[in-house]
Length: 80
Image (tube, rainbow, N blue to C red):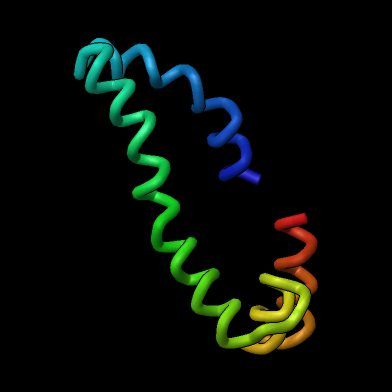
């Protein structure tokens, strides 16, 4: 719950400080490039898991295989 709160409430309010500190060109470059760098490890993990377990279900299937049905349900419920 706290993570969702900070994701929602902290989003646009930090951009002014970023622009003031770095300038508009570098700030726009960082806002355009950093999400891809941030998402790259997860993308590679999902690709590896998809090739290892070619089943329908995505995260639910992977978590069920690793931790059991209870945690798979929890993960499915949270990421739904």
